[in-house]
Image 1: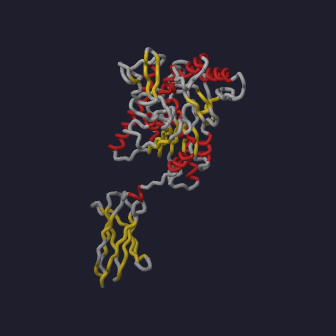
Image 2: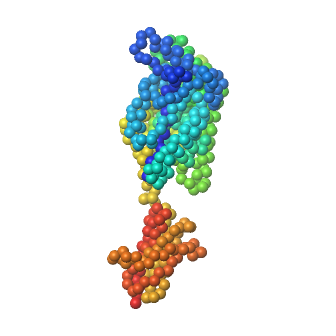
Image 3: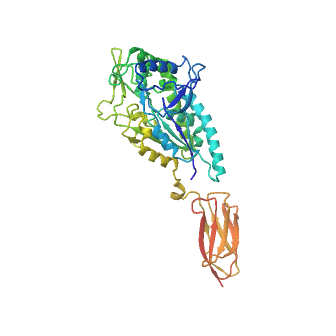
Length: 464
């Protein structure tokens, strides 16, 4: 079993961002009377990006450094409250030293940009880990197990499927990843927020929140691409129905990103099937259900309203942020294979039961050598021969270039009477000849590189 590298990729809001002076850009200090509103306005002003950034990195003074995993609670009113990753960090810290790495990134920026940075990060860390394992005498070449929360799953999937990272991946766990976006992004970008979430937020803070969100490519790339618009004559998706205060160019970019991901995923899977290869990596989605989650957008007299369930469905539809249908990979027909927890969006990655499940992903035992016949070989040995005559031992296999060693042994003691290499006979088989005195003997042929049944044995009677 290889000790694969574990890479955790957090979601939106999940990395600490610091300015050029090392200050945490939105670390509100609780309990300071009269300063919370002022501090929130200032912090969200610092988070605001220049217009037209696209998939690139900003210039100073807009550059922020992602320094660490978020370990203390934060909140973005209208987007999400984040309970941070304190318990998850403790779980990851219990794994083998050097095996776990965290990829903090500037979650304001485009998912495409973050995926390019993830590629460079993983290539460097995997080479370090492989060198460390070789020094420990590990015969297997480690791959990578990705554990991704929320938007981190989109960043990672883009790296694997579009940027060519799938060959180094063993598996990918997505926790509350919005494969098809989230209505929460509509709320954050328009400032049209449900009353149950924001009862009395001052207009000046609301303006600051919306301005910051609209400057961020990543928040636009979280817009829902499923049929989330209800009762509109022009269509059921955001790319066909204009929503007040939503930038149409950024809506198109969100749909383009999703199409790009899905097209590459489909083509890569088709290439694997055509070549007879197994899937490059295993996908293990985890989602939350049982909390009120807005899944639909309704327009009435130019005003946006939201619904937390589809017509005729009495169940809550998600984890409070991501709907169940969005937490399911788009190539899957339904969510039957998703591991569902009755937990909220940022509570999911901190759950102890999930941590035990993750352990099985890190240390998955390869069952195939034990469950399937795989590449093997068979032997053909005469049941009886006369004394002095050659004993011809043959082997057949669909695999060419096998190293096959034949041995003639005494059944009782295991003493080796003779040893020969079976050589290709030009007809797709392998052969060798032995001689033996009268008696009962055991013929043994071994192929060390064959994982399924590497040793074959038959008995032989030599007559006098």
